[in-house]
Image 1 (cartoon, rainbow over the protein chains, first blue to last red):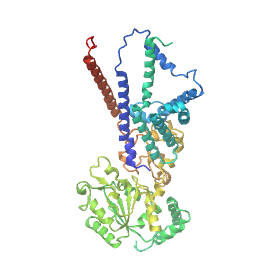
Image 2: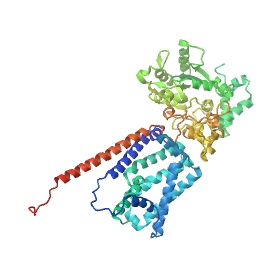
Image 3: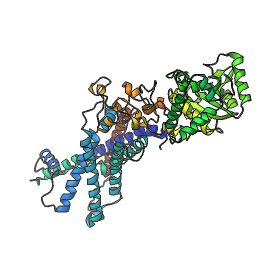
Length: 219
Length: 360
């Protein structure tokens, strides 16, 4: 059983620290990326930036036709995981209560059954991706500590949240404390690892497209 | 009442039938989560039990605990049992006052030294020498330490005596502490609640009289049989929680249909008590049945756990301001870094010397 004072800390000061590090770190990293000094291109542009930039954001959302089974597996699992996570994080009624208390506004929730399915799919996809990462020789060589850290800190809140919703194993206070702790860990880790892609991914795609557009190489 | 007469005799004198007495013993046995065979032992022990001397000290409290216990669905066997103990000192209930009252406490302590039960309601102020609550010119701390010396056991009744309660709420101006922080060498049973359930007191007393020892207690000194499960675990609205059906306001369709009050701030999931099973007012109901969420009144520091109407999932502190400040600091740091980078580049460009034929 978790002492009451620790439970209060996790809901109070601990949450404040985690949010401060997440928001501050994320704003810093995104602003630093946007403000990064770049060499002025002296070449005459062969096309526009915006059209190809936006097109790249769209194009990169699809499976490349030349990918084999394992490549497609990564894409499908990746989609399932992201979709599931998004549904669970943004549309579980308890999460909307939390977001409402922070943002000042809320939105309708999805039924519990839908959230449960989304959570299970997201966790299953994470497991598939991990197995693939470990068994595929190329992927294994490409993986470093940060990849496994990202996987762990992302999976833990899903798992503890699922146990909490089922009241499984421990009492509600213990499960809620552990769930909040894992969420706070994720919030702290996110801005400083590759998990920061949650905000940078579309900007990065746009940048790739825009560069190609300027060079006039995008079809 | 004759002090030496047994409980059985006294109950018989009050017109309590043997059948009613056994029914009471069965109820208490089941409340204490004892096996059914123990009913006979409980009955036999209670029948023969002499009136135990009880000294009741009231410190920083509101008398709500006493109101709850004495005005509980009376007249029942619980209150009769309550009458049967030799309550030798109790501010609210005793007839004597002034020096006579204090004298009766001292006499009772002397007469059954080492055997009496000490019941405390209210917290003990420690700041500035404990002057914020005094009785007959003596601080609560002083009286508690003196009375605890000869006590067989201490029962902390209510959240204030158990965990500090309202007086200990931030900023705790009187330096209030629970009994357990003052007395460390005596067995202490906590019966938290604001107020606590009367049957718990009777149960603890019956257990003590039957077995000569206190019932099994949890980490916070609470009898496990009463505080082993959360309100949420035994709540009749639990199926709605599991199906994600929540009342959004106190008078919407969901509230009228009896849906879960989680989103209206119910603290049932984190509160250990037996309100949902033992119930109040003669078994009529408990707060959630009346349409209001659980306040978590039997949990430590429940006053400081955020608003009663803040859902357990929501933040209990101001996170928005923290996030805004963090965003400003993050953006400022990024701009400062960018400006510093630009300055460095400019300096590098300035320091750059063009290579001439001479250099070659």
